[in-house]
Image (cartoon, rainbow, N blue to C red; front, side, top):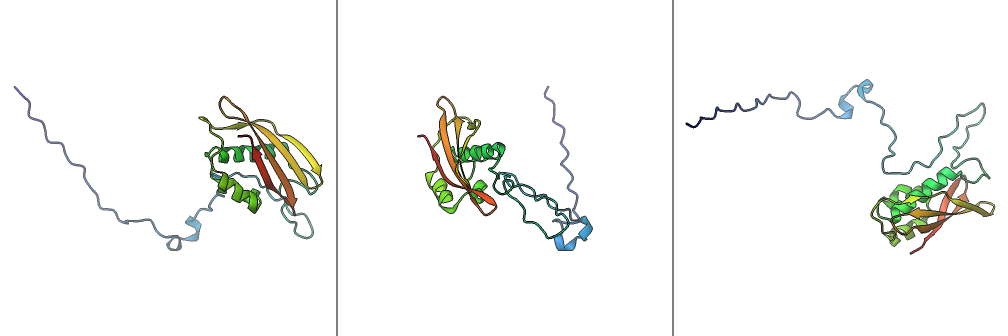
Length: 170
């Protein structure tokens, strides 16, 4: 003898008071939370500005004090970002503020030249300073069976260091 299935009750649909959330200008100012700074998908290489001391306002320093070369951690982060761009795992726009215009165009034009099954991992940078205001570095990029070398040249433009050239092994 077969059983007759019991009817399943349908979900009850309750009317909503508001079809969409209020616009920002419709809410009181106290309800609007401050938006956090957007850093997802970008490389946060800029230093926080130092607190202003008594006297005239100071310009925020980028990459450290004038005359000093960028520290190894920031150089490695820049090398990692460019290796990820060259492997097609990161958009070039994520480091565009750290690149000179010609270098940015060359990076976009070069496309994916590092083929690897897993994300690339850069080693410790080897840094040299051929002249004042210029830093050259190279990093070993571990990406599968065959590691590659990535070389970068950075030049100081005002208070900011910009990558003016890059080169990698095929």
